[in-house]
Length: 206
Image (cartoon, rainbow, N blue to C red):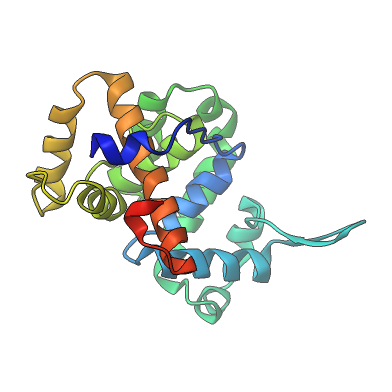
């Protein structure tokens, strides 16, 4: 894995400037694969978050107030019925706590978001990592991490199930800074590998 990740050079991942967008993105990733989640996010923003600007329409994550005002049918129309209760609970909590949440460090933000009904530790960790840029709190058993780690190091003894993988991953990088870097580089490598596959090039040459 080390040799594969070294080929990336410098990696910079800008934190999401909007905590609400980070929460929204993480919630919409629940129980669906990454490609489905990306498509759902685009539908969600286009349907309910499009704003007119001098340069034309821009689709953003719908504001919490908008989410709270949507009907059940509005969620069903774009395929987000499963996420309705979580998104609306998150919207209500965000309106009450946004200022305090934005001032928290990554660990405390995970705890705060995990208190939202139906959010859960995976979603809380993914949103906190996205907003703070600290990938030491990312859910390390995530399918994306497992997939790209195996692709980058096919001979590494990595467990299959999420819980065991996360434990092994943290043993590989017991220091917090190392855990952040290992996770971030692996996900970045996956983006390059996916792009190379899309272009018809071998993924391990990305």
